[in-house]
Length: 72
Image (cartoon, rainbow, N blue to C red; front, side, top):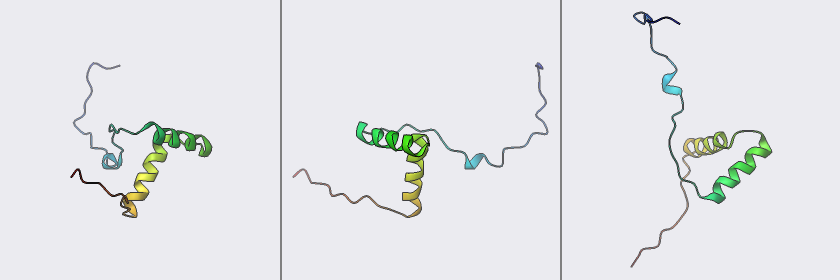
């Protein structure tokens, strides 16, 4: 291994904007168990399944159908 490397002619990764970003998300145990079980059935990691589902929701512009009760 060299002590120094020359990066003067280096260029940025053109695909860097397409890379996934790591975040923290809090899921209830039942939801997590659902995706883990489904991942075993289809042979994909559960995080990939969650990403696929969320991407599908975003592309089809799905909105959650829930009603909130007021605290009145």
